[in-house]
Image (cartoon, rainbow, N blue to C red; front, side, top):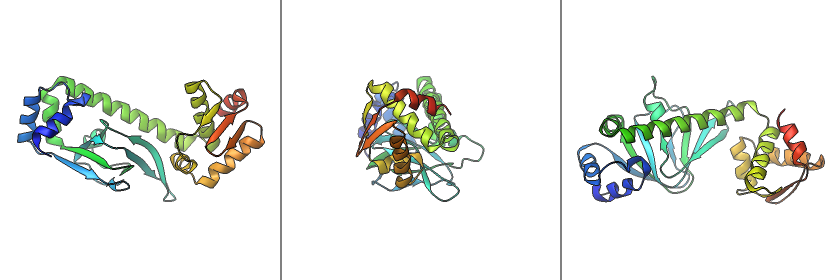
Length: 228
C-alpha cells in the first residue's frame, strides 16, 4: 500500500490520530513495516509461534483461539478494526504466543516490528498511552474469558449469556445473534452438548427454545442457579 494512502487510513484510527499526517508519512517512509491481507479462515499466527511484531487490524475481524488438552480449539474472543494484537507478548520474556488467531472474514493488518513500535511510543505520548490502554484492556478481557472457560460450567456460561442479554435488551425474548454452532464453538463445546443443556433448561421450565429464539420464562431462577 502506498505511504500516503496508508497514512490516511491510519489517521482515521484513534491510535494514530495525534500524529500530524506529514510526520506519520515520514515515519512510514523511513521505518520497516508491512500491510498484509488474510482471507477468511486463514491462520495469522499459531499458539507457540514467536512474536516479533504487533498487528493492528485495519479491516475485518479476527478470531482468537486456545487449544485445550484434547486438541479442540476454544474460541476465547474476537478482535476487530483498530484492535491491536501482540504488544503484551512482544515485550514479555519469552515472546511466545499463548493463543492462536485466524481470520473470521477477509482481514487487513498493519504489522509493526518492535523497533518501529518503540520509536512511535517515544515520538508521541498520546500514542504510548493508547497502546498501554489497548494492551491492558485486551489482557483483562482474555484473562477473564479464559477464567470463564476453565472454571464455569457449560450451564453457567449459557445462563450468564442469557442474563446479560435480558439486562441489555430489557426483554425475556432473545433472538440469538449467531448460529448455535457458533455459540457452541465460542463456549468451547460441541453443538450436541449445547443442545442437550438447552433442552435440560427447557425441561426444567426455565426457558423455551426454538430455532434461533429463546424465551426465558423464569429469569429469577436463572439468576439464582447461575451463581452456583
